[in-house]
Length: 275
Image (cartoon, rainbow, N blue to C red; front, side, top):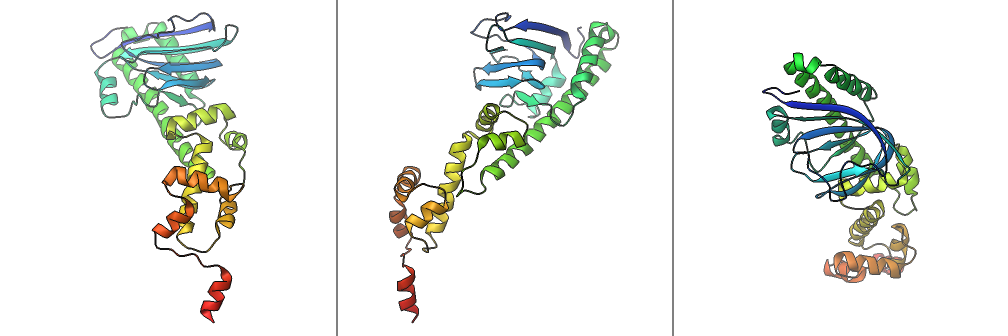
């Protein structure tokens, strides 16, 4: 369908891992697209983001000028997608205003379970010729579907904030990443990849940084011995703690404490001083 506002191409396709429509170097559609994975799992890759895992009920947003590829990981894997390819000034403006973000091309349908069905109905209407007869209405409906999808993206941001909070708790204990992933309805592998995509750190790296930051703050209070502090922030011994601390901040814990003008005194010395 073509109009002065946009161009739209729609479809539903099924294929297996070996039946990709573009080679390993990727392709550029020279248009926008929404690709909803109805069944199966696999990956999405683009030249900027790299490779991320894709699962059922996730939507890929494709951008003009961005070389990408996606599909199954293995030849026997099943993949069913429904898609809309589109372009025009309305959507270019959305990207220009930051609503469409190339750094966040994969969106999960967590809070809008009806989106996939409505998207399918829209596709069928376009294939039935409705878009040719009412192009402006067709664009408006697509705009509404896109707005609902972008609302899910804001849910993603809330998810990341909650994940950050959860990973920053109980730093003295071991935390099963699989348990945290389950809380957000994801597999452990998906959680690890998506958390790193959003924050730049793996869950393990993030907790390590939080532990070291907590230790740095408590070093300034001058109360605990290094052995005690190491245990409180989740390290097996103070040697490991000291190595990680120096790697992160450039000074050993003891040297950092002295550099800040804090002089450690054990409890016996404090008692003598007070008496």
